Length: 318
Length: 266
Image (tube, rainbow over all chains, first blue to last red; front, top):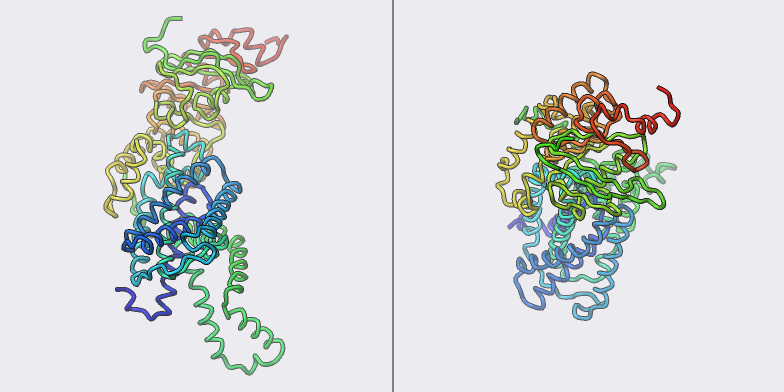
């Protein structure tokens, strides 16, 4: 449906951007209750493998497999969420990181899905674009409602002061566990979508950097509003494309004054930097992250910032 | 002492908290009568805040029993105690600073409007995307009543951290009341308030009592304590040194000694 609107290249970029955004939301939900997870890559892997097994080995149709993959991931999320209840901050980061490592190890040694050779021949899903953006719409509606609901407020209150929230009657254990496992469920969906688009996954696909990237999407986009993960994922995923465009424009410039020292060096540097291959992207990510932490530690979008743009707020409900 | 009409609301037996070799609270027995304003006073470090932390479940007691309305609550998590009907405020204000005044109060109502997590999630996930659910509307109306009661209604959109100190104390009170408690633990509600605000507060506390809420009050402002409390317990070094009517306490030599030291001549 959607896929006929775009050529293959654009389609591929849009798909990956969308999957990144879904993954970013899977990080955002536990983060709303103050739980920072670097292990979302592990959940992506579980979702990818579970759904892949369902379609390839059991011949289930993709939507069913995706849902089963999500549910299995969510169940594992409950399991990881329990120990995560008691620990905070850097220790929780380590726990989730360790979880991702465990998943990577299991995936690498599990012969049923190809072991270290990777899981090959996952059926290709021609409608990934529709599924991805359908899922995104559902997620955005869900988060928009969450932000205006009592459950969303309860999550925010846990983020701010867990003890006070508990004493004020918020079921901290339940809400945190719910947020963590729902986040895992969303990650499982993202993993399933990813696996059936690229048709080949292995343990390296879901390495630690994937978890870091997902965290970056949310941190850069803004973690206090539900538009943040979408913006961050879109911004960082499309950045290489913007830079590629910039480079093409740079070539259009009259080159006379670029040819002499020192401008030829500057030109060379910029030109090379804009040539965005994988390694250099990481340099740029690092620089962007450092600048962001100094200039806008709360991300590009913040809740207060959005409020300012809401002209003539509905005066008074009560 | 005549027995109060409503019976015993909260009863504490042998309550002890130990940190290493130090006892913030040791072997405390106390009965709090329904419908009373029961003040707990004592010098700094006497164990008053520890007492509150044990009652609300923030800290676990090392030994002793707490009975609320005839049922033991020792093994309950803080949230379960809140649902049973015990609410508290904090000495060092612990509002949700980035949330608005109205949202802070609505957090207090969460446990009443959404008894189960499933109901809360269902209202998010399966309700039509636009428009407000019935529970939300009821919560907001009730929250506004509370804010009007405490004189904060016109500040409902303000961020909690933007409020002046006295108003933040009032907001803590509103948030605690939003959980619909039958026992309210107030930890130094008048701290940092000016005399005018304290006078208002004394009126507010009395009115809350008249609504049928039992109040335990930890407070350093002796004028306030002596004026509004029905009964006073004095703690020192984690043990009870005196208990009685405000007038009896004022003249008690043990109390004077605890506050002013031995050989103090007034």
